[in-house]
Length: 354
Ligand code: COI
Image 1: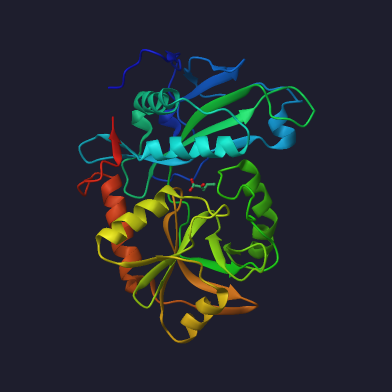
Image 2: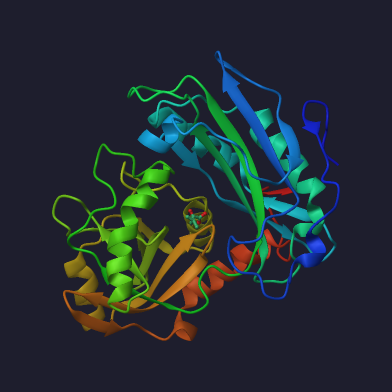
């Protein structure tokens, strides 16, 4: 059980859980019974409050609506075979949201509010954590500016919330990605490394154009030359060329994914060669043509390990090696999932057990 000193708890009169079909969970459409909310005013955070999930009322002049001071996180809780609830690396998300906050001129969120509040919320709704292997409770902490003011300046007031959603897989099949060479997700010196809401808004039009052309998502390239591979959709992208695992280095345009870090840590432990280096589109295409490209996949909290089966570059579509043949993504991705669900030993201390 979690210490309940600080946070006020108002329980829902009636749980909605019996209305949920846990055998057919979509991603992000079903919300559990409770949410956490805290406000920031005059330089201080209020005591957090856990209350029934529901709508909130905001000013139409609220500055985050107009100017985008809005950030979020995503992490998951799993149910182990012994019925423990395991939250995967929540401190990492606390650290990252505060880096996003600093970049967007927003206040830091205290560790107790973020972590203890989350633990208490998830514990209260622990029956909502799915047991099925492909499923989990997606935890969405977020913060937005609330000053009712149309001047462009950092807000003085903010709201921090956590909502949770039992989810099934984000992608149901291997992906077809197109290398984007016109639009840009992030530029050096911008906010690409932050989990800023606006990054996702800016990606929607190019993704929609690609989807209208029949592909699932985009491979983002650098803003200057569109020559170097950055991310894939909302995930970090990984490639195995020869016997080396490549992923883009963490610059100001790359989201420092918790899944990225976990994957690289396990791959390093397994003795796999890793290069955190920019891969050019030329190198990628050449590696397809000379058969040295073994695997392409995305890693992210929502998507976990998402295999890429087809890749389109400059109008030409390439078929990639069969998913079953991909030793690194299958073994490391499988081990990561086993650690999260308590099937493999968590010798890194990554899981927070409730
Ligand atoms: C996550 O993996 O948590 C993401 O950020 C993807 C999300 C926008 C659905």
